[in-house]
Image (cartoon, rainbow, N blue to C red):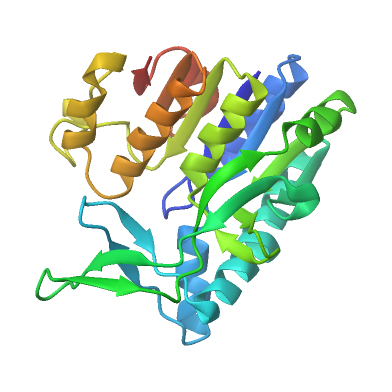
Length: 269
């Protein structure tokens, strides 16, 4: 069992990834797919005059500021653009894909972060944000995914969750994929992005770190910057959830999933 996270940033080669998904499924390996939404949400927000904003935690993690207006844009981008687009591409390749988001069947259950501490960009001072609709994932409905897999479907999951009051919540796609991989007992989690993997000296791809043992994760977190830091954190959570191997790999390669399985990228575990 493989859980695949397809990054949502600009430069991810979706066509190559989908073609490789089709080849792997035709070879008999089941997949669950989780996708990101960042570039699509940024583009849609710009068109709708709801520009993207970010929050940086005191510990250095960066996330999308999801106020009510941004939540509407994010939902439209995640479900109405990226998810539907991936399902359509996969169906055209002979994959019986089915689109889901975390509200469907309470697939991803989360707790809203009602008060988020963030740093002011200009001054570095801390402030408390109370209108952010992001969530911390607490449970995965693995039985729903198993039901679909056993019926021959390939689930494609958008990174939205259901909160305690049935509200929509934005959740991090990498961490959602990690939670899903752990809940399903997946052997491998592959996180595909628009870089070669974890780089010692970003953006120098010649400085790719090919292997990170569990005891080296603190150093990997220290090296990682920006969105890569969240991917390493997701890898750590997947390992803690029982996933044996996590691979941070490059979507731009030919047959990117098979390249990752062959050891291309950064292998954690």
